[in-house]
Image (tube, rainbow, N blue to C red; front, side, top):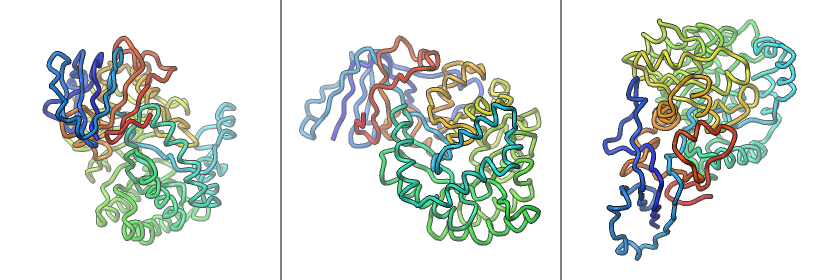
Length: 417
């Protein structure tokens, strides 16, 4: 099946020589083509250019070609959401009320809320029930422009429940056209029954969870919540080292509430990304410079929890790349809307629209290990795109933060909406 999209007002984020990521000043540059067309064969981008140079595709009609007229509309590469906890049981709006009343994230956790609350609910849910809840979330983010999403475990906190989460994620991969990347996050919180015996829980993650996750090939990456009140730098190093022996590359929750040392340990172990980064200073920036680790900011969590915003402007000005992701989860960021994340990047983090677009496409694809095939429009890349409603410019995408600007979704070369 072939697909031709013609009369595109502007084709956004095109690359002739694809890059794995963009850093520093390069983040303010985006190549576009006005009055454009793009041709897709199977699930791959085959060619694109200006309408005045459009080839005669009549020879391709024998393979059945669909033609879409995108007059007045723009075409973007799909968003890549590199950090979510999208598989969970139930919501946590009561804790949201506690936040309104002034309780901190840590205070709610100490009362048995937060991650431990989600762990209890997940334990009671079956795989089928988790899938039934997750599918509408996946459908929603797909209709908002996301084409690839990372999903973490971490609400299990027992061997069987962590495996249950990861098996659900594996089943979801074949039930939706979205590209799904699974990450093992057994060290998300310390269960109540291990209070005062944290080293024993870490031992269980290393000696029981990781080998079984690896034996079923359930995760591409391993993550740790390296934060005060959760897991120490020493805990994190032990867990990452164990996961790496089984071929799982590290990703880290780092510096959400304090200068936790998570950034430094992430770089030390060549983590693909370090995520959150609300508390990022000169030492963390210097550590990240020259590394292969992608700094990933989660605006939804900072917004919802009322946290300090990560210094994205300072990071980019220092020459770093920056990715943005939704952190979709029931407790601290109950939304997977990457259009809102794009807008937050400009409104709260003072990124230019071009920088923000790079942060939610090519750089967030890198933070999932996918940027060779996703995150931009280039010949040979996966045809994951969306066509906007009629809009005046690509700057309008972050500007009009309250509305869905996506009209048509194309995943794996097929129109799904």
